[in-house]
Length: 525
Image (cartoon, rainbow, N blue to C red; front, side, top):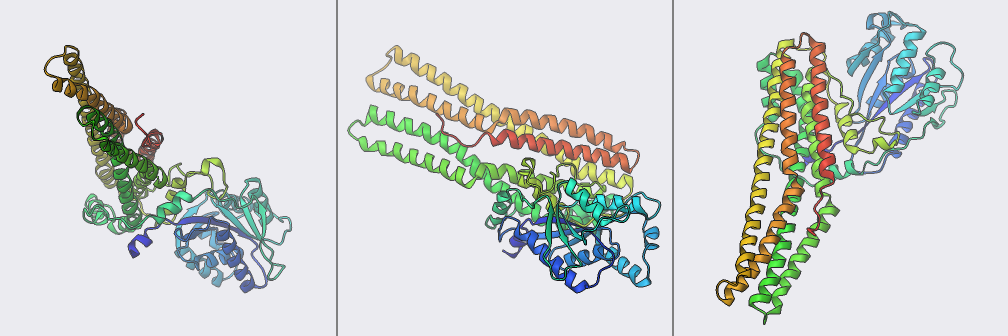
């Protein structure tokens, strides 16, 4: 149970910071920053199942940048991302004392990720670009600002104005007003609908596949290819609890959904057979019709539970999420940032943000350790090619074969039942055999079309033909990408191809979600 709780997907909020370098009461400001963080939490949809954690994005300049970073890092699950306006050695020259430089170095050591902007040194342009980077990459900005206009390029007032123009939520803490509450500026904090994320975290414990230790297998494969085992282990171990849980949840809801789309048409056909059988053979036992009633009750109950519990919707959402977690370790190994699945900020409330799955992927991704040292090119080619792309090709080939075979089985069953119906109709029309034979032919003439309709309904609901064609196409495109990947001349070319492969699989999964979202279990009528 503890493992299940540990695998709950958090809602990770990126808190940016801008502010003055000098202020009087550091303790008072620290307490007020803490209250601002609680205010952000309170603005989110309440749910005990979904932990809210923070990433603080800071340039780590003296004063506000470090104060907010330290206060955020004191909260559970928080991580630090740093953006430096210039190279670290040049940036250190901007700090006035050895103690300040040591404080900077200590915080930098705690950073998950460090982004260095391409400026030759410090100055207005460099600080402006760093401040804009913080605004562009955060969900909400905390500004320790006295409200005065900026005295130079990249000043706090200028960055706050930029945040307002970008419609970013801003919480302003005035250092000249001790104890004062943070004042909201910019866009309001408007969270999107995260009901799907809460529902995922609320799911009861589920057993995984039990197929060994996937982290150990992946680490061993990476090591065999010539990649640092410990760096891969850190990323894979960070992803594993989430991937294993949502993968198992997807399988649970897939089984429930497929049972529903199988039994609903079969029970509907059985209800028809019962009524006809009773009328032809047991007219003195009308009580048999209660079997039809029972079948109808089971059908309606299955439909009601399926829609209320969201078996179909949760299956496709969890499967999409599991595939994103599966890909993340390979993207990370190649130094690729999360591809453009990321919606605009999760707190902006735009209609395009309403997909909780995107928020979940971003939340997990932004908490993963970053692989800073690129592995040798040939090692990455071997690892990504064999353990990801070739594995995906094999998966899609198997999927195409499975769906093609099932489509043929359902189609053949329908054709056989149609042929038997035709034969029964001909024999009945020719009045061949005794009266009992006529009753049997009547029964078969009604039962076979009902069963044929049931098979046709299952075939259409499962989209076997379309999914087979889609899987075969994806396999072919991934094979072509894997060939190009093995010819990549440098790390940049490899990163571009890995991103292209992820976007292809992301689009395939998105299309699959859209396709199946409109195939919930329905009455076969």
